[in-house]
Length: 168
Image (tube, rainbow, N blue to C red):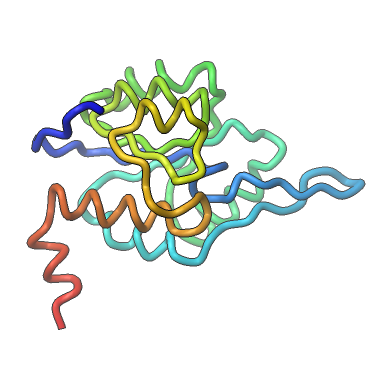
């Protein structure tokens, strides 16, 4: 596992399906109609949003409107449609690998998990993602993995600020 030194990255980039959502797709005769998103992850995003630039990415063309409804319309974050084959170059050129925390779950995410400043994946990620991540989170996709990641990131880079958030 690679080390996580203290230089603070500016970006958190999150793969939608299999991280923010469970990765399950529900179809009927009209096509893809549902995705499952968890209830805890937006809490984590609220904690980190004032400290990092947050971007969601997906390669799911057919389910893009579903993801957009949750991520852009309901939560207020940015979402980009980027194919798996173009993700690495896109993130490297637009955001910088050393300036990015990447959260992914699949085989196509594994190179980003390995090359970005910090790579994190849900407990139920593919073995390739787990192997190339700095940390495998305790929660599964769509069941609090983003909250886990947010708390981990804040403890690492902004512990005093995190303590203030939860001070009673």
